[in-house]
Image (tube, rainbow, N blue to C red; front, side, top):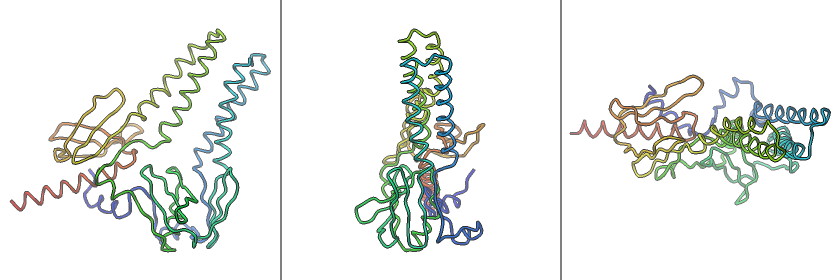
Length: 305
């Protein structure tokens, strides 16, 4: 069980960002004036592996004489897509050299200065957007660790706004995009390839159609996983799950529980489990803080009586 005091610390530190203190950065031997931020390493390797694997399959098809027009089209589309994503992931970089910011992407290289930046905004989906006036000049996706850049913004006294205040009225708790986008890509590809094989009267069509059910189920599970907190109520939806509506005041207990490779936030009414939400979903920490605050307020009311 996570203590209420832990939630308060999380609230002060902004639950959606990993901002570190100068002492922590010094301990890690990170130069806070000269550094480079790149895309997540495992994501780059994943897309590179997929590109090489599919390119090898297509090459084998040419050697074996089975590379028909439909097969070339099916593999070619995915290879071009994965190859472009791989190139973007390896090229994208934000390098800071004292006051100069160098941003490199598929669109080229651009340089900015911290004096040009007017503010940063943490979006609902976990991304950090950097603005110069009304113009967005940089964006750090949710899978990028931008702690060093956030620290640089604070050192230059550049305001960083969050969506926390808007969540008091309505908050959506759902998986991050990369949880369902990658399975969705594989699902659509396998489905597309199955249709091509059916058109060519290939026996392997049924196998690919069957394999598409695996990423398809994962895709639908994450896509439909949605929890909305609004006006003191919690609305829960999920894949093959019955929708439910729960009053926040009726939740008497919550706990984080690890199951195999995943972790869930489990909500109880009395001793009955009423909802289970993935702890990796965005805004889960906000929900814990919200429930902890409600619990504390209820205790105060009871003590006054």
